[in-house]
Image (cartoon, rainbow, N blue to C red; front, side, top):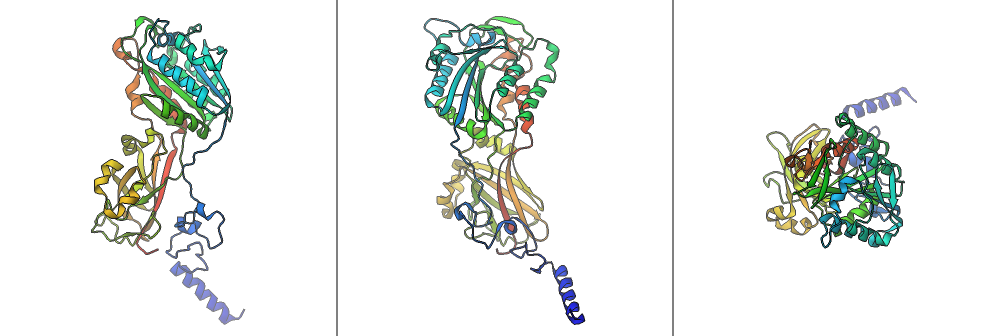
Length: 455
């Protein structure tokens, strides 16, 4: 290479580094905006197989909530029949408790409406004794008539640990219990319960948990957390729970059955994530009409030509989300208000309001009426700072936390009528221990882009 040629190339290299826009050295910046982001990372000029699975705006693979039809190998259903459970199933002529009615129905649905290679039904008591029901078809009537010998007590962590160990990769386990904790030594109350449960679920991170909470009339002896016996309990209704454990797509099959067929009081879900959520930025509704910006044509997750985003010139916009396939816990407005956040590495935003479709319907501009019907929730967001250059990739993310009903149903002592009234002792410690095994999870995300330029 001649001295002249070398000098010319050196000048080009220096110029490219100075401008930071030369394609030779920034060929990952496919839209030439001096920012390597989601658009640059995914868009390709190469032919793409299965183009219907690719987001045309970003070039990235679509990642939406998938409902699988994976088949359950073993459905193992465990009914606790320790002494504290007898009050839910007293042998009385002509009268069934709410527990007997609900659980006889649920077990019947398991028999007739669950797709599984094997269905096994057990009574479990005294930590060691497991009784297999003689006939799967007769299990519902056995609950109605309480035709089994009740045990003394079952230690809660041991019960859960044994069932988790018996749950294979393609199995689902169901536990029906009051989940009362009555340790042999009262000193075990502090700390050990939550720690043990957290460690169990940390060892099996693939296991998701759904909890369905019920209440029933109760007649008989009640055993407190300190192993005191209360005779002729109880005037109030007593809580009991159905736990469903297994891999998320397998648990989801029983979630749908229980959601359709049973009347439970509350629910919670731990260890479930949903990937990227379907949604879009509304072009006309829920925005400051005096602000200059537009949604990119055919790309509902990109705002373009958004000038002068700052504390003085805030950008107000609304995103519609379809959360219909999520558990009701994660559709709940209060849960969303407490746990939905906006994240970005180079901008600042906050959520100003979250609406259901019914609440937002009156705010819809006529241009958005048809498209808005696809969405269940609407999130109003204010972006007030974008670092230079004026482009940012943001993400709406739902964080994992316990629903508020757990606190309402919890009591730290059940020695008196007032303390145990429709509550479960140490429930919060039980659930929090499991929750801590999944505390940093993001349940879903909705990524979008704001830029000052026209893309």
